[in-house]
Image (tube, rainbow, N blue to C red; front, side, top):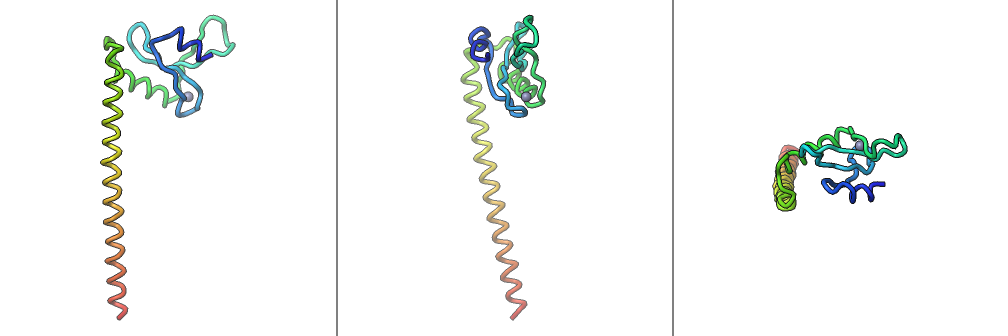
Length: 122
Ligand SMILES: [Zn+2]
């Protein structure tokens, strides 16, 4: 019941685990540390959520520990994540430009090799 939990536990976010595709919950606990959880469907009545230990989920929890370390204010989260998205978008733009340059250089080299091969044939 992830919908109920996001209401009962406001210090977190639901997401799909990149590894297993299950709905998981990244939660900042009392100590301010982020951890990944999964619903505890009918396993016991004691605990609503279990730790989720896929590597991808552990990494996402670590990212949240960097973005929103213990003691950070919830109000800072949106500008920090917005800035991260902008920075990553800039990385994508730069990487795409490099790939385009590399493809162009490869095409020019292939053209030069072809021209050289034609010249030796004559
Ligand atoms: Zn998973």
